[in-house]
Image (cartoon, rainbow, N blue to C red; front, top):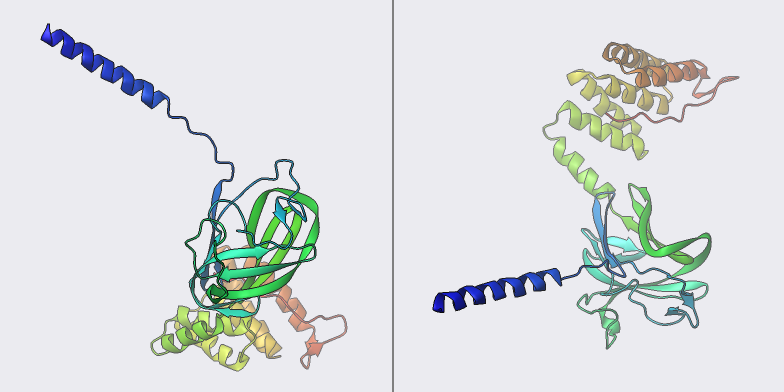
Length: 304
């Protein structure tokens, strides 16, 4: 009898547990979380936010879901966070490396954008402290022809020295410029690397100088060293472009011919075509200026 009761109790517990497990229902979040990670120059930028939808509602208006003139968490749920691995200029304001809450005050024609040092709040701070502001800027807002159903933060217009942080929802868009320091970091790496360099180091240094329009004579010294150590068709291509930038077209053509021959041997038709085009254009040059019918080459080589 005792064994029967124990068995019955065990069965009952099992059935109760099964019912409890079956009762756990998972549904999609109304405002899904999202993480945006982007390398800007040499700086890591990360945005953590939740993405509410319009769902037939008016968003930005005096009586909208996000009223004009009021502090907004810039998304849903917890306040939106943005982090920088290095110091940046955010809308022209210097901001140290770190993580910040991203608050905004939308209005009809412009928005106030705030980076707030205290990131612990769910939504906006119950007691706002101006001393916690790392940056406060004002940017124009723009109306778009298209509609964004889901609240969206983007990072675009990427370059070596910056990007644009975009905030888009409904038919409104704002853009905040972000500037990063690349030059001083690359220059420090170049100076360090030049103490004991490989052909790749010389090529990388010369390429940076060429792309950044720095001292072309120094770039030529480095690219020649790279090719003396270990000539490659893409390195010879870069040498030809630097020589052309200096107006030394006969030498540029000679380097391009070598690059073309090596590229043909390697089966790289892209470099063959680029060199052929350059040789034709540089052959038309006279005294550093385009000869009749000629046009100065503006193309940049592809890096390996």
